[in-house]
Length: 469
Image (cartoon, rainbow, N blue to C red):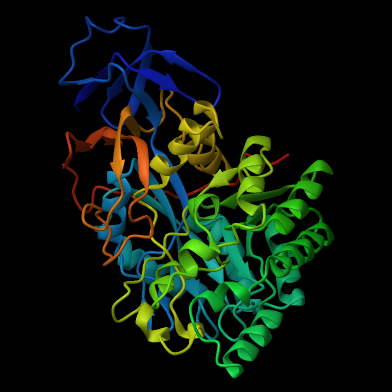
């Protein structure tokens, strides 16, 4: 097995930063040394990290590769999406298996394994979407936790007729998860009320993409978040994780529960930190369709973005994920040209998450340590992959990113590596960029070149959360 020495850099963890050299032996981290302390060790490869940060590979616990939606599927395959992740310094993704009405949970998990096996550039795991909470599905939850390394289950208060679960179904799933120690993930928007508002907008002839945001008001995200937190309390404080939180009203509910000592957690996404309803979703000539996602981008005339940055500093928001779900404008987003309700929901960010959050460090919103914590360490802990993932420590997987704070540039569809005909971040300038990426000790990005391969990435069976209170 090859030995690699990453020398001269500053190792940044969730708890501090210090000049250290990192010795990698095969697929794992062998040791951390004071600068120069390993110079007499025989190595096969030396990576010069002088003037750069050495950080644990990013862990993106919310992606949707090859996800079926509205008669099409997300544009990135497991091969293209994980390759793009590697370019951006993300070395582990956790994707979502989809179970809909009438489908068998175990069959769907097998189908997603077949999609991903032998195709991923970086390591991957699976969550399970439960779109049909039946007695059989509840039994399957226990089997997945026990036998399959799938320990988190996503439900929806949104999308009636597709993924929506009523309060009784959600409670039953929560009770089942509580017994096994699994985590319940919730897409929390009031889908019943949203459908009424959307239908009324169409009846008025208001069909442009901006209506997607106007008919999904933040108060309905707050209401649904309050409701699922109450259900989690009834289910004896089952671990609850709110996905892609976008609104101040929802954050208030999470903060209140956490202040009471509850096992309630939440993630946000870069798009909710930087982009707005007016500037992106409200763009003219159907351009706004590029930014249709759920929850929607929020108004710049309110204080959602500012509150989310605060939530990241206070840990009321524990994780930054992407909700990476790319759809091309041509032939996909255009399905909703005459009715915003038919626009496939999703944006593409898996390649840019580490850069976009480092930009938060540059702008004084986060510390370096908090950057690593929210993008790598906490997601690994939250979803049962720590200390294999999310940290540079002896025995951990050698998922290591050498990050150049003097790098960076302008994001563009002309230079990104995702399978998308546009960029959600076109023209956005970032300070800092990936220099070198190791995935389990193998160099997959170096010197502006992709050196990885499809099939290098392995499935990661996950344990239970190590982040509970």
